[in-house]
Image 1 (tube, rainbow over the protein chains, first blue to last red):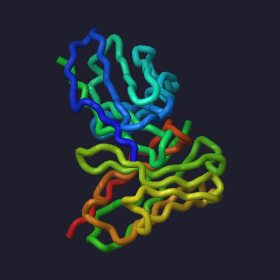
Image 2: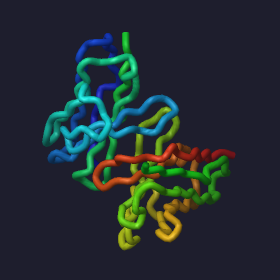
Image 3: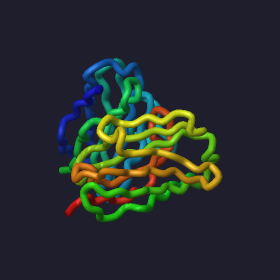
Image 4: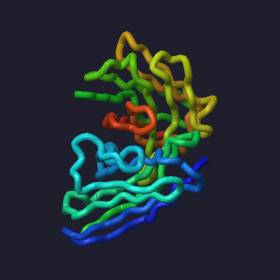
Length: 106
Length: 116
């Protein structure tokens, strides 16, 4: 299976820019997607196919990358962005998710 | 508005069975592939099953293959997950999701706890 590796946690101050990385153990073309999950809620799609903003998602969120290295960027970070962020690939079977990066605000 | 509402979770003993349901609304259910995804407590997400829009193909994660069965009733706009031989490691929140390569819509989840 394709393993997706994410940093466990990040802490940033409101107004700053933050980049959350996801590295795949094998190439996934551009089929990397990003989700935000807040405690007690279901995941919410933010970015699909590496760089496409999902409907209703603020333009503060952006995605980049291809192949094995991908980045979710939030600029500027707001207090409401406190959450866990997951990457997910759909190029290789089975679909797999990263373990998540918990974003905390200072 | 797309809505997915799961039900059927609960506390069960190891080795028992359970059937989850997901009622869909707000879109043409019979035209879309559907998935089940689970999340163990304080853990990450695990895709477990996919069914094509017409039930012609079904795919499973190795962790549930042979024990879980995904199905759907397009006349009732309902997705199912039949779970047999449940183990403690199946304890998780189970979500249904709509999407092809990415999951644009998720239900709120139903909690399955496997414990003696």
